[in-house]
Image 1 (spheres, rainbow, N blue to C red):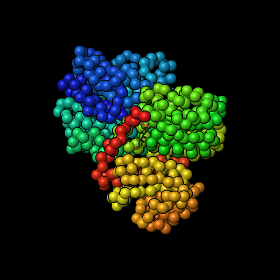
Image 2 (spheres, rainbow, N blue to C red):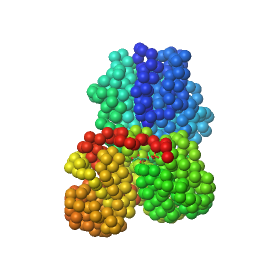
Image 3 (cartoon, rainbow, N blue to C red):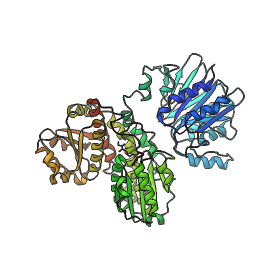
Image 4 (cartoon, rainbow, N blue to C red):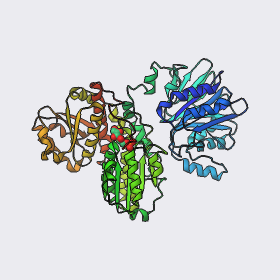
Length: 609
Ligand code: F6R
């Protein structure tokens, strides 16, 4: 995820900017840059690649000056490159800005600014912000920034600097973190606490909609209308390691909690305001092209494969196209029936998984059209595919995938609705209902995360069992597969997922007294059948934990414990039902004393066959 730093004070800014960015390296980035005011003008140095390259660049001519801002970029809009790196400047070079997040309406703003004569140099959404301040500046920096904020939509942490008013830095945030470190005659700005804890432990944590004017001796915080806000000083008492995890004990739990935000970012700018359609600017497909596709093949590994199985439901049910889903390691060795009428969709968080990349190459060799769904801009898979949809989940550091999975599901659902629109397979009212449902997801995911105590208790109660079963039907079965993978990979408990109707064809022999069975029952079309399957395992004295939607007052008659998720559209239930399963796996691993973020024998990116 991108990182932001800023400095204003009596000391040289550049050394702090580099130090702060180094502290944020763990978050992942593909390029870095700084801007420093030297008393006359702002000098910008930026470079694609590791921070070491930027350090080398400024070694010979280190920018002199006592005020500056810096950034590490994790690409979303525009590939990693020197020009796409932050800071971004306006046409005159007198305004600079660094940004975390996504400006949703940037294309519209960019067109307007180009028509007004502005010249853009990068492909980023951020650059519009620099040109907008230039456009609105009439001698009052603060007023210009306020006007910019009234124009932009999306999520952001933004930090501005200008040659016209070099004794202040202005910063603001919406749905992205930003902190101000309070020093003695100097102040610091950062997206995350690790960047500043070596310098100060006194901070203001900005809230959404707040704007701060930071000088070397003062910090004025106000709302967007300019009304002053009284801030409490937050004294940081985390050590450096805890600070990297935002105060969470592990990256995995941090990433589980990031899901509401990640889901929001994935949808950002992609849902039409009136819920009538999905906007994928990256896909320039025509109705004719989509109509010509007679089959989709989804190819992926592990968690991404599980997302692909959900994708099959979405694409077949909404866009009415036959879909097959393959494990990438199997796909290319089974002589798949693929031709130029097939669309092959590869899904990969990292964009580097070797089997998936090889599957993609094989699909291309066979003449298929290819689409990659990935989280990493400029990754090998992104470069190889004909088209790419980025999930914009932010870097995932824990080995066990969590937010990557939920954002892959959101992407697949949006893709199915998009293709359904082009193929005219869904009435407008159903499209609106689904997009309305997508909009509710961040708040619903948040609701689940607000009350994790019962899940923690189950994990402590059953965490020492050696076998756990997950059962479900239809989309619940797909989620069961992911829940069981999560549990086994981080807690080392033997976990199996079964289509509930399949149990009696063999696996029921393993269900004995006291064996925990997680039964998902969120799918209305198969609900009654699912209850029959729950009765089958209860009759063998299994302990059943049911996952059901709020409003289901029936399930508790059949199970030992119930976890309720917010009521959602049946197609969107997997996105919510998986969260308790991620939490169950996490707390079971903690109960067993496992190394949650680095499970034994596993690696984050699998670049071997
Ligand atoms: C499980 C997990 C793995 C990955 C798989 C594919 O939690 O993370 O199963 O999903 O290795 O990785 P990507 O998505 O990077 O291709």
